[in-house]
Length: 446
Image (tube, rainbow, N blue to C red):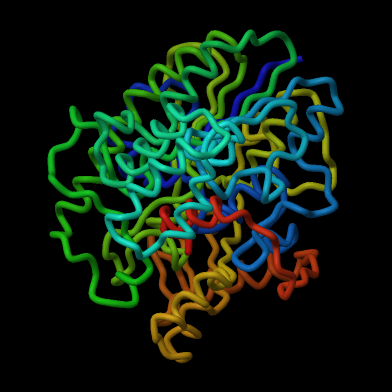
């Protein structure tokens, strides 16, 4: 069997990939499109091989709790050792994204629930709004609790330093260096599958000091989309993002070097891009614009050459590409093996409104029902065989790459008619630990 790795460079725009990842060998799919504009539904498709609405994985149903056998489960049943690493709080056990993995690690923020250190999530919740006096309380708790005092203090300092962008204390990145350490220290054998999500291009944009060219720690928020944009200079915000991407490129060069020594196939992709004021949208909490859905995708299966392919493909194809490389099949899934097929196809993109937590947050901030409904609408878009793209926006239907609106709408309708939509109880409340909620808030998801 074949060792296969999938690496998601979270939030990496296609234009930024083109500028900074020219070193990456493999087959590059220049016309690759995502099924959505943010992490959860796209990872659902990567793991489930179907559209988000078919899996029931999207804004108000963020768990991979479908009855379908998912990627790591298929591979595990076929005798693979399955390992994973995620720096994204959405791709975690609490949301069922670790199904089928023999080993799954998180970046340092994900270890807040370690029983040997102070429960910082509980402490932060208890003392929120108390001001500087909470720091003295934090020290007292580290000494008074039945925990490792030194590790608890160190972790608390690291958390605060990372939030403030003090990388000399917090560490250089948000998990890539830990992923590299995991790969270097793992004794990979035969029949291995490895998944990794890296968040260095995701907000907040805190590049390591050696890469930082602007004094901006930006994290484009949904409020900047419904408001007047970021307070910082827009060019500085984009430059802060670019600084992070340059670092991501360098650290991924080291990660890729380790992976190619152990794996036969390495799939590198971005789940979605990022908006920097296009159509007055910031971040990736709204819309299906091409800046979000036209994504990098590369498949390496040996050698140092770069091959470019122009046919229209989708992240929907990654699932079956991985299974085919491993000699495993799922005949009911969508997509195809990218390595064996050279035809262009049409693909749907979906957005199912806002997370319930964000709606509550907006209501608490005094936003009107009219504004919330405007952004909570279901949106659809499609790319067709010639690479032209169109999608619904809050300002009407938009088209790009010379697209004809009637053609795009017909493609959307044709695919939607084939969807086996999963009925999800959107009223069900999931018990999400407070530390995960805090991490999601830091990343702008709440």
